[in-house]
Length: 294
Figure: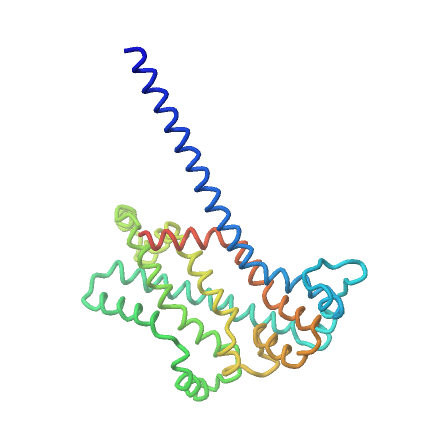
């Protein structure tokens, strides 16, 4: 009996050790693949940033080399700021992005709360229309949008961009916030109403529960608005209303042979968005995953 128990224990220990080695090997493979894809994603970005601080001969002589005391140069950035209009471009992009995020969050949360709380016959139809709005690309309506903005005297203004981007962002924002508001405890809202809170006050009480959804909506709104080139080119093409993306595109067309300035312009257009995403990536992933799971 003693030998049998010892043998069983030895076999169990061997299996556990083997499983542990297998789990470690799987983990190594997974992490290796993740590191590979991370390098594949950020490699070109780092290459552009690195070469933007080098002279033209150094870029062609060693594109993968780090800048040295002999090859380092900021002439590209100086030409970007002296010949370009990037400070105003950043200001315009910031105004359009921030105002669009605020309008999208306010309208989407109110609409989602109404769809969840008010059990009317049209609620499923309205929710379905928002889903259809996600599937239909807004660029298909460029001509009608342009006609509307001309009739409203909003052509070549930041207001036109804000209205279009808000309309573009609302469908997915409402769909995501509906999933969050459905998870708000009914007891919390009933207790607020029993204490005499009005409907808007009840909405404000439920709002902190859906904070992850607000973060996800803000990030989902920010990325396409900051990166968009089509509507700034169509609705706000003048130099006084150009966004960063449009400013970079036009600068690239003018300085196509000036590689330090070209790479500097691309860096200035991409780095702010990368930094914002890195700062808010945790809230974005958390909010989006919880919203999908719910």
